[in-house]
Image (cartoon, rainbow, N blue to C red):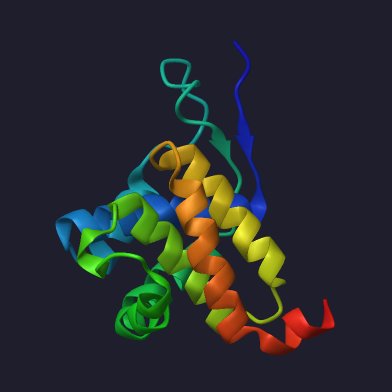
Amino acid sequence: MTSKKVHGRHGSRWLALQGLYAWVLTNNSIPSIEQDLVASDFQFNPQTVDIMPKISFDAPYVHELIHGIAARKSTLDDLMRPHLDRPLEDLNPVEYAVLLIAIYELSERPEIPYKVVINEAILLAKQFGAQDSHKFVNGVLDKTAKALRRRELASA
């Protein structure tokens, strides 16, 4: 049995998604969610190798994502809302968490190319979301990127 590997920034987003998903569902405090992530065993476990890949991640980036998103949730919701085809409250929790991460990166991390942000979000949606959630995520993020990254899109 070979284990899958998740590396670097993708691993950071992967872990942040786990934390944000838990936060959306439980409304537990961010420090509590982060503590649970740190306490989890994200190393090789032969019992769960097919579901839990080996992860290399940037802990400060996971921290930034989780805390930054929690602190800016209302702003991120406002950036997302005009591009949704349904009320925010009706979003699947996985799709919502993926969108929060990507819209945070689009708005707060201009050094990350918008195409990378969108591709990473699509990967997470395919990995954790419902069957076609990646299409929904792609559509919302494409519109959001056009609103937030006009200069970058114009020069592409």
